[in-house]
Amino acid sequence: MLRTLRARSDAFPLASPFRISRGVKTVAEVVTVEIAEGGHVGRGEGVPYPRYGESVAGALDEIAAVRLAVENGADRGELQRLMRPGAARNAVDCALWDLEAKRFGTSVTALLGRPPIGATATAVTVSLDAPEAMAAAAGRLADVSLIKVKVGSVDPITLVRAVRAAAPRPRMIVDPNESWTMDQVAGLQAELAELSVDLLEQPLPAGTDSALEGFEPLVPLAADESAHVAGDVGLLAGRYQVVNIKLDKTGGLTGALALADAAEAAGLGLMTGSMISSSLSIAPALVIAARSRFVDLDGPLWLSQDRPGGVRAERGVLAPPESGFWGDA
Image (cartoon, rainbow, N blue to C red; front, side, top):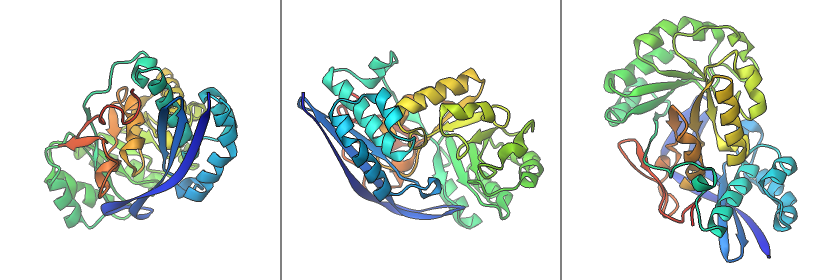
């Protein structure tokens, strides 16, 4: 049966700037893959991330290099050998999952023997800004269940205090995006605990987090930039308590499932995250989110306009996409 693969770049302007310690984002630039076979079309999306040496042009080149193999029937298992983990493979892998569900008139969750995706509470992010601006943003989120606070290396506790004062109820993730030193990680534990912070995400630069070996934090630590694929778990288990699984790092849902299994086997908790993206990235991530204690999938909420039929949010709770959007017939 004839199969065709098409890939393109798409850009989604943000409704407001998204600031982290590494810079500011105003547009979500993604790659979109469509694989057609037998009257069905499977779709996937990847978000190339410069932090990992990726670009939209480079991702499209990676996809072009495997187009003939995929059109000749390469499956998800073969894709793991043909492509490196990253945004390009994520787009193709998720398109193959979607295509399989549509061809067989079922859902991805049914293929995996899991229940359908339901409403999912997600973290809503307060991006890095002046304390007053972050407090104002947090005040608008005071009734959500989980807030993620972006901080840098300069006086982060002042920012966390400002957010906590404006939003005393939600659980809280603090994310320095690799900008702290080990002295800050250790020295700020008591204040983070006093502020009821539930999770500290990737405080140290990846590659320097051997300093965490044997460290016993008051606030659990989550690996993000240090955690890409299942093979990373051996090192992570002695340094972190939670692993942030992002399909753009694992190279798709196939790799994400493998990382989730390996992390759980090593006694690590699960978090599901994403880049700033459209709902086409979020839909497959919801499969992993159903297994996770922490969920951070608010990427589409930053967009001026999402893809039609995508997730909807109310008070930090995502309703799944419309039927047929991704992962079901």
